[in-house]
Length: 277
Image (cartoon, rainbow, N blue to C red):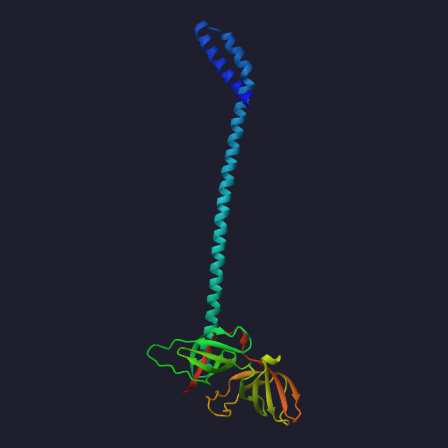
């Protein structure tokens, strides 16, 4: 590297000396000889300059492409986030439409919209917590025993109230019991109990042995009040579940295994039945 620099400096000094000598003494032949000797060097320097220019252009293009790539990544990330937000809004709107549709399906019921804000993380109890905002200018009274619904059917009953929030015992809990009727021509009645902690979802007991029940039949709330008659009666006609299996018990009654009508594992919004009109 040092040798190259010294050679270049020597050539520059010799060129300057020859120019002065040519100007003073008219040594045109020396200048011509010098030009002939240094043409390869001049071409090499010119070629190096051109190559450096190309390398510079390539570097600028690479830097520009990298900047555009980063901008595209940011745009894709933003659009992905917006798409997820839009999908979430669509899902929420669909849920709200289905909940509002309950009022059209059950015009005789007074319903209160509530959001699920908690769930027992231990799994020892099938309990969710819901919260609501009272409509402007209206007083809302939620009491123990009131039914809670999802668009597909019965969810459970209120067991504790805390101001504008309440705990709801799901119908799948082993301590839950609802009077029910099978939706078929025989209309047999019985008691639907939760069986979640026992390895299944719902069980309908005390179905008369002579009643005709088939797999796929729907089971609805009967509207009958259960002893000790201290809680609100669940309105009649609310879907509880569908018959999955029919079996006989030791006392010859029929016992039905049910699949819940509502998806109780993914509840986000519900309706509390405040009463009838």
